Amino acid sequence: MTALFQKQIDGHLIPLTHESGAPMFVDTRDHLTDASQHGAFSQLVLIGSANDLAWTQASLPVVVSKQVVAEIEYPLIPAWFGGPPNKGRLAQALENVFQA
Image (cartoon, rainbow, N blue to C red; front, top):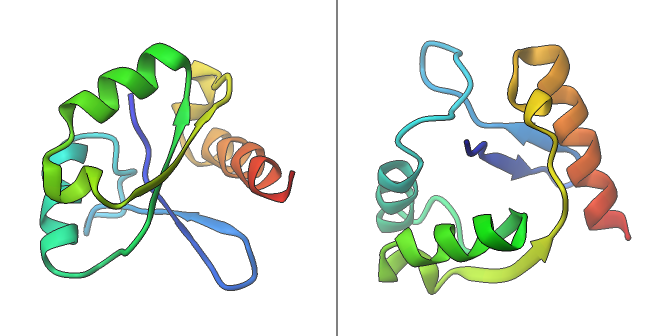
């Protein structure tokens, strides 16, 4: 599972959602490719287990992998990928990673 977040100026992370408001868990590779081609981001940080990082980096197209500026090995809890209350816990954990 993957989740996409956008870092705000104040350092908070906001989960990206589909137009329907549903969390963006699917089609991550296609979304990142499209967003990269349209200049929607200039830097990408990957966070997860060592295996997840390796798999993710290997699956990204070159146009996206060139924008990866950091890979952070950090244990993510599957429950964090649930609905909005759990997504808040994931955002908080990731904000803590960036503050460290």
